[in-house]
Length: 276
Image 1 (tube, rainbow, N blue to C red):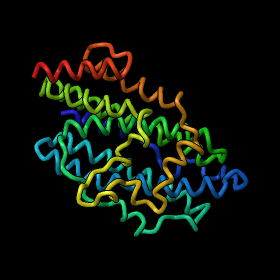
Image 2: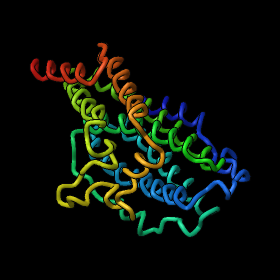
Image 3: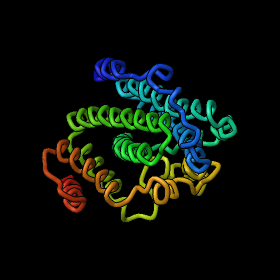
Image 4: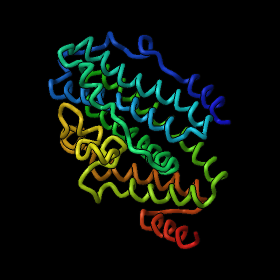
């Protein structure tokens, strides 16, 4: 089992909301209304760990080890929402999300293959790590800069934990796992060719609720993510390339084969499909 070891590793580096966030350094002159609004949207988005957890537990009933790990992931992701709300409660209480606004992003996700979902969220953690690093650079207010930096480090650790489960899946399921990971890897590493950000919170996950079946579509401002990425934190091609490089690097390690670009990963995906 991986859960006991991962618990110890993540427990050892867990941050304390009171002790590790420098609340006393808050500088109101360095927080604009525009920036504060983005913090609210991120707080609500992070709340979507709740329906994602319900999905993970439902679709991994036969995997108690991974399901136990999700208890750590869920705790830390909900803590992300909480610390952002705490920031607003202290410094912009008018923007604290309402319970109804939070509840809006709790909806049922359609069942999906567990291996695909694992890879999707692994890539999502890589992307969110980079988004939050860029958000920390964009903000000028010291406390929120520290918060986003702290959250980005958590997302990187979560990605590392998912990677451990992906390695285990390849040991257990062989080419089936490799094929699933390559398929989703091609999708998630091709984001610059699509009209929208490729992240679990921006993908359609419930056919019955379409088109209001993405987390982002259920926010008070459904258009905020694209604006945040393109206009505010300026998550440009150079940053997107960093995400793609990390995905390809980890796929190379997993598959024990070098992938220099998405095209090479896609060719590998086709080889796996032809052999099955």
